[in-house]
Image (tube, rainbow, N blue to C red; front, side, top):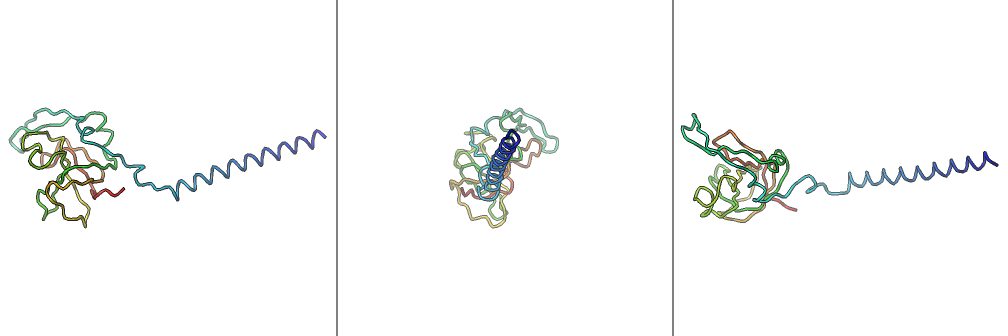
Length: 167
């Protein structure tokens, strides 16, 4: 009887373990194929997030002028290369060449007009087929965040592969 009871316990334990394994595999399958991944790897950022930066004046031989050299804080550094989305005002700088800026403020209040700083704008590298944007159009954009410290001809924040965010 001892052997029969032991075999019965082993069979019961195997059955329970197989059921647990099947349940786990089912959950993995569902999460891979049926749970939408959009938004999971993206982070919504705010203009307050991007304010985690300080600036020092640095002379550029190439530009023959001083410019603000950014020192990005830890929360901003953690976003480097991440997919993010951000809401702001659209500034069409040169629409024919696809040069657009997303700003925390409308055109009349952006940093080059004296009411903010370079941390309040994001340069957009738009994907082909982007829509026509109007001045100060409020829009949420998504893309991969690039931090720029050294290229004086680009903004400190650049949104690569940018497109209109659609949740």
